[in-house]
Image 1: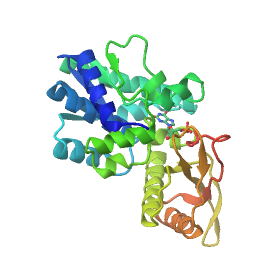
Image 2 (image 1 turned 120 degrees about the vertical axis):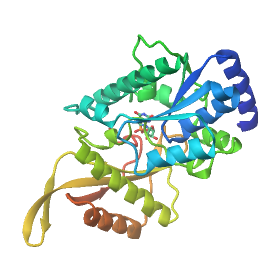
Image 3 (image 1 turned 180 degrees about the vertical axis):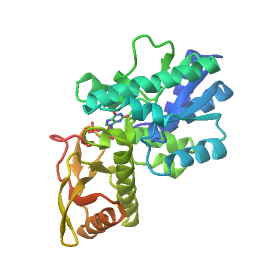
Length: 309
Ligand code: XMP
């Protein structure tokens, strides 16, 4: 049985030993992993940690504001916000391959970070990598950007306090550290964000469509009192035929996915109530111009992964 209190104590000692009086920076993504790593580091080394929030433009709706409120105002962390959306959008122009997207985002992320670290004279980069991230990366399934995207010439030394634990254990640690429920119980969200929820090129127009769709999915799941491991919306690449009034209308297709899982290594498609699915379908097609079709993914993992890319 995992003992969160013991884990926290041992990691604090490990962190203090590794980092000492050095200065560290961490990327906050809003996800439970980076939040837990950040608060653990904050408690271990206090003012020696700076939390950098990189708004790469692929965050969920309202997420940037929420991150500043929770970590800055409520938890009192030293936080720096960077709006670098345009840099990411232009780096991803014409990039359609999922692994290439992860690589481009991962590398730019680190570059933005290194620039910030240099300004702050930080020596350590803290990451919320958890066990399945590097296990799946090693197996060649997906290169989670916080594992495989690091350029070999990176100057910063890595600190990964959650490297050996799994998501359910991370949540236990988060609760034990007193992180608010919005964070500790938050659904997992990939580092490259909405960019890997758009099949093909992640243009700003498509990002805003999938962001709205994803928000509707999360809202309706919550309204229905459902607690999947993860629920998400994906924007499929090609337009299909639809109808508006009496005329043919080509529109985008949004796929909805909700899964039950313990550690994301395997997952089962959730038996979502039909009424919730219908509400999602109606809202997505009415509220988001350009979307004419909504699908629900009934595939387990394996054979499918949780994300589409
Ligand atoms: P898959 O799609 O591989 O997802 O079944 C398993 C879990 O990992 C998340 N995921 C990622 N997380 N960077 C991340 O930080 C990534 O590139 C990435 N790809 C997938 C996914 O959301 C799920 O929780």
